[in-house]
Structures are given as C-alpha cells and as structure tokens.
Image (tube, rainbow, N blue to C red; front, side):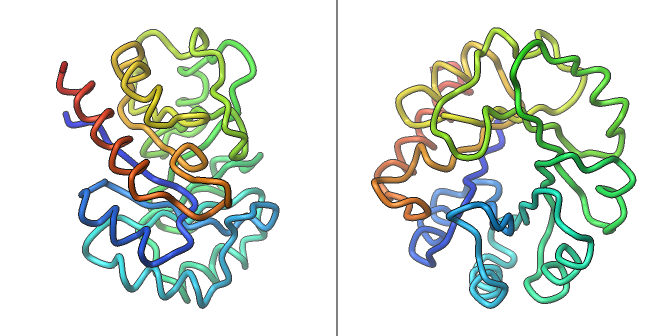
Length: 205
C-alpha cells in the first residue's frame, strides 16, 4: 500500500495548490484555537472549496466543544476529523465522519490498547506535540502496528526519508517542517522535497 502523506496547518490557497499538484493524500485545516495556524470558519471554507474533490480535507481539533466541531463540518465541508486532545472514543465517533486520533508520545506506546479504545478510528497519529518542530524518540514507535499508524512531529525534508525507511509507517504528517520563519506559511520547495523524499523512501529508493 502506498505511503499516505498529509500536510497540516494549511492557511493559504497557494500552498494548497502546490499540494494538489503533488497529489498528497490530505491536508489539515486547524480549528484548535491555541494554534497559530487556526482558521476562521470563512477562511477554512474557502480553502475547503478549493480542495473539494481534489484532496482530502481533515479538520483538526483539540478538546473542542461539540458545537465547534459541528459548525466546522456544516460551514466548511470536511472529509475527515482529527482529534488531538483527551477526547474519548464516543466523542470522536459522534460526528459521523472518519476520524484520526492523535496522541503525544512521551514514552513507550501501547498501540494495541489505544487501538482497542479507539476501535472506530481510521488511523492513530503518533506525534511529538503541537507543532514544536522536534521529533519524539522514534524508539517508542510500535514495532509491528496492528493497524494504520501515522508518524508526525518534527518531520521535514531532511529526516522523513530516514523515518520512513526505519519505521515503515502507514502515513506521515508534516507541518512546521515544511514552513519557513512564519508559522502557517508553507514553502513550496520544502513541500516538494518532503513529498519526494517520503515517496522515494517508501519505494525502497
């Protein structure tokens, strides 16, 4: 199965257009208020309309009130959801869309237990934290995941190839690693290099 590639924290139409041309699998639209990449609903709607039918649109939330999630689904148009806080499985499944469940990795990961708790999740996303730019200790990556696991946190063009070869994740997710000095502003060259490095590694090159 081909490696899945998601780029999170998209804020500009031109960045989205680059990702459409690169044929990545998904983009993340941030609705977590603490994030510098958080989008107003109207801005998110414009990006969503641009992406519709061309690339999967994932709404990213952290311990949001259900009404906030519903408003984004209704007003923006989303294909999937990503929850990055303490949300339980019933909450995650309540919105009727496929979802990813994110976890901050600080030690050994009991992937089987997480998968049992979030049995409806289409994938688990293992992350270092909220856009900090540093990877977690990859020794904590589960040796033989029993289902789809996405690697996130501190990934960029310089290390994604090594990560894919070493860990063989189902998918990879980048945000700050494909940005320049301004958070939320992606760099086309970094995105292109990231995608190329990830795909070369997944193909065994």
